Image 1 (spheres, rainbow, N blue to C red):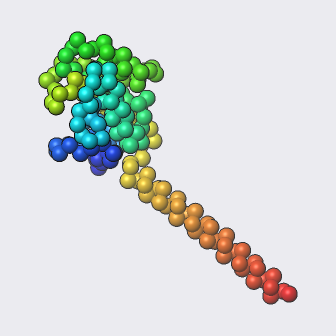
Image 2: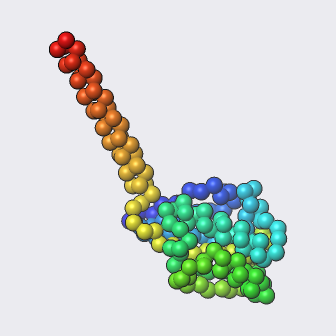
Image 3: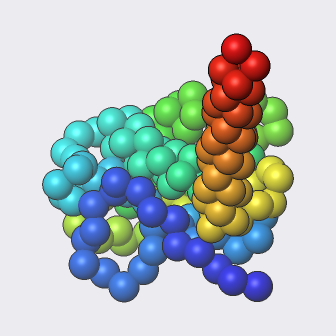
Length: 166
């Protein structure tokens, strides 16, 4: 079994981890926080930070070939448990469909001034690896090109025959 790091446009923050790792039909998501494109924590209340965190989380899930509806488990880390209600309101917007992911919420001392961090596990329907899906697309493109070339060849062969008959 080969694990694959998920590539996204999320900023590299200089720490030794991947934003997500896919192994067969599952994606294991690192703890995501409210990071902006510059790699710095987005300032704001718990609702704003939770929204940005889940937007970052969704980017990795989708880059892995899945969607939020296939997230099976999350762990939410809150700096202050008094922020639970605000976090939960935004979380419910992102995970509105039943069944929602299994979830644990714990208080934690978070880095970089974050108020929330969310990690999780998602299922990838279809089970095809990212590398093999790229190979499949490439082979489909080759087939398409070879079909086009065959049609072109047949067309010109037919024109030559018509000219020869005249």
